[in-house]
Image (cartoon, rainbow, N blue to C red):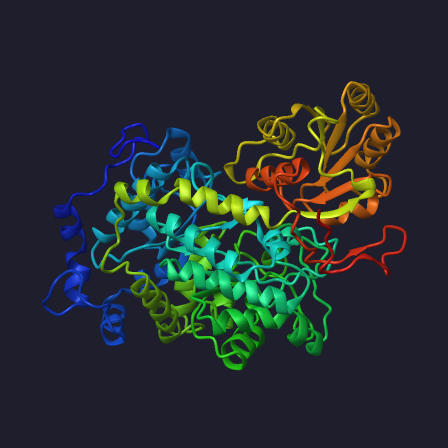
Amino acid sequence: MHDTGTGSTGNTAQPSRRTVLAATAGVTAALAAAGPAHAAAPDDSRLRALVSRMTLEEKVGQLFVMRVYGHSATAPDQADIDANLKEIGVRTAAELLAKYRVGGIIYFAWAHNTREPHQIADLSNGIQKASLELPRGLPVLISTDQEHGIVARVGKPATLFPGAMAVGAGGSRSDARTLGRIAGAELRAMGIRQDYSPVADVNVNPANPVIGVRSFGADPRAVSALVAAEVAGYQGSGVAATAKHFPGHGDTNVDSHTGFPTITHSRELWEKLDAPPFRAAIAAGIDSIMTAHLMVPALDDSGDPATLSRPILTGILRERLGYDGVVVTDSLGMEGVRSKYGDARVPVLALKAGVDQLLNPPDLDLAWNAVLTAVREGELTEARLDASILRVLRLKSKLGLFRSPYVAQGGVDRAVGTRAHLAAADRIAERTTTLLVNEGRLLPLSRRRHPKVLVVGADPASPSGTTGPPTGVLAGALNELGFTATALSTGTAPSAATIAKAVAAARDADAVVAATYNVTAGSAQKALVEQLVATGRPVVAVAIRNPYDVAQLPTAPACLAAYSWTDVELRSAARVIAGRVKPRGKLPVPVQRADDPEQVLYPVGYGLSY
């Protein structure tokens, strides 16, 4: 951890009390009767008064949540200034707020927003200060995608938890609530008040290229319970949770980032399979729901994506399910929402459908002006904008942004990546690792019989700012557990020469651990495992993403599912391999036979132990 006030980030230090009071004076005067700064949250009449004083341009801005490059609100690196100028036409986050008056900003690691916790807190404070110092300035709702597992924007030293499918394998609502509580407390300490999590999609399609292990599983009842628990955890810590992707993204074989998926479920199947987790989220008081860029003909046969569908967002989500919280689009830069209409029409149609927040348009100037023009020409009414702005302001008020928009560096030290939080993540992970095959009771490995372990396999890019690569993390964890382990990265598509090298190395080892990543029938990873098994050395296959790998590895005498290649899940797998903990995870999705996908090889709830 950095000391409070470190100057290494180039960010503005935490604002002084005088600066805070000056910056918030206009908002405070508008919202509260005479009284202390910690007065009760403003009621609707005061929020409506705020809306009534906004210019039309300010109202349009409040509807957008935008990316911006840089680690600082006012002094980003030159490369980030150049990227901002190219993509947004501004130099900094402060200029973005001054020009467009956006209501929200989303953080990404690739936009260099999330270098380390103290810098993130400084950035959040700088954004709030820049917005609040504007005429009629409002606090900004800062958001990010911190799902944990394979999708997280804030990495170490923040606490990183197992992803949703791993939590599904653990099956504990208490663990899901703890995850949300701790993760929420850490995000809030860094000034992030809206998290685009949990994923409420029920993953019933093993070929799903975009959801997969981001889902809690294939059983809608189990998914519903875990969604509700995680929502309670996040929102109990003062962070808005976001159930996604409505009306359900779990049965697609197209990635909506790059294509336009279609869900072919009947209305009845949607009610049974996809709707329950969203109903559970709404019953739990979910603050926001994210839309999906996909077509569901049974719910709306117009050919429009759900993000732009009034029958889905207003007819079903608002009227049928009774949801009156914030509706945020998935990123408007994704192909699934851009394939039918141009980028100028998408934000207007989304608002007409019932959306409140327009997330990350590819061209903000085009989108912002399109909404402005739609109001001026009468396609959208100002009252329609007001309804969404009021929902957004209610959420900002609920989250305490009007009372306390800034965060303290001391709060970062007290909350982010603490020993207790990291220990909780390890305990949760230990309940998720799933043992699927254990012929001849190979596992747990014995340090006496198998002292030398070779770790080979896929080394996909480390997710979530974790240590990586997976083979190295597994080998390191096994070394700490008393083995002599070495790592040999063979990749997701090992060549014949690479396989031969691994086989030669295996002959000098007492056991082999092979990390597999989405193995298919013709995958070279399958050939690697088969040739390693042929050496006669004990082989333990660890699926580090989808658990379906086991169906393609019939010769492996031991198979585990870790559900992700983040450090916390790999360390858990190593402890299970070494026998330090017993495998307790149960499959949250079925695994079909490789030779007959209509037949289930391992059902939901399957899992061995010692």
